[in-house]
Length: 466
Image (cartoon, rainbow, N blue to C red; front, side, top):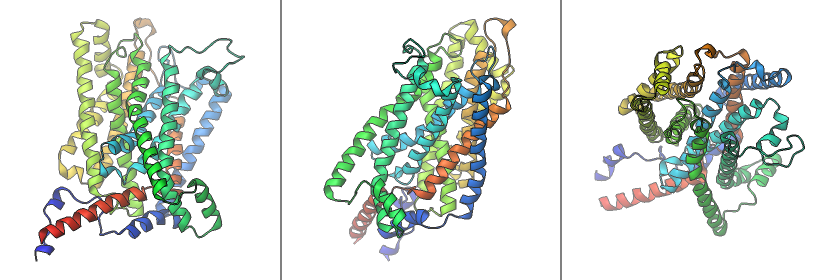
């Protein structure tokens, strides 16, 4: 009867692959998402996402035809929803690289079922973010001459490399390139699996080309693991550098509320916070639609909730530090900016930010909330709303009341602002849904590696019980 007793350690450290799945079951379950018919929920989601993506292109076409004045930007609020949404989308993309690279280097096995989707989410979020600075130039077809150090006949001058906006271009493009390589290299073994399982010539040809002749030999695995490790090493500093550089857009100015050294770590923590929240939102939905409960287990989701709790505490500490420094510095302009944020015309945005980013994550102290799918889904949405408000508060409240009360103003978004933002959601969801439909959304080879260790540990424990 000792063999039939439940190991008490499993309650504290449940297995990452559940349901008694074998290697064949893992391959079949993940491949069936691509090979089978799309469920009804997928079609419903696409019916919502595609029209929203169409709205994005409509708004961008109208902006190019009419001019940048169709946005609600004004004097003194020269930056509005465009830069707010740019910073927000860049932040969303941070969890993918963190889950894939940093957790891989620290040998955290719980990343294996969620890293592929998080990496894809990174690429799609960066694509949405890149839209804003590109169209912010007003003439996106000339943006390459303005943003990259190319010899040109239009400017008759070189770009200003002292501008943080120029640093953004290099940081974001590097981040996107390395993330894409990291994502594709990880896909190669699984694309070969889909190639070998394909029953139609077209699928076999497409997956065959994408899998780069992968045969699974020992030499190929050795080269694959080395390349994956090197890309993880390259990606890790990018997690810290990219959003630090984005924060320099603000921190290197002399504007009260922006000119502060806390911004780089504060922005990085906030980016990881919002990125993990988006991963939880999407993975709970994908888990439900495709029945992936045995692969994306409660342990994966609970660990992500713990990361959100930790980063949420860091963000809350940063909010308090900002207010303390504004008081301690005895700078009347800094004091005014922060009091204006909390009690001025945008008080509703500031307290929405505090409620969503500081109060909401505190529920994750309780295991009941960390293991409840509806609770973590709702709280993850609240966190993403709060992080959007954080970026809006930083930008709008620092600009709308400057040193001259006669030039004070108020930012109100136009329908183009709102339509463009909703449209980026449509583009993001369309790309993510297509990824779920046509590519393996969970890393088959990595999950099998975890399952192998799990089985080996189980055999060792079973042998020890005798």
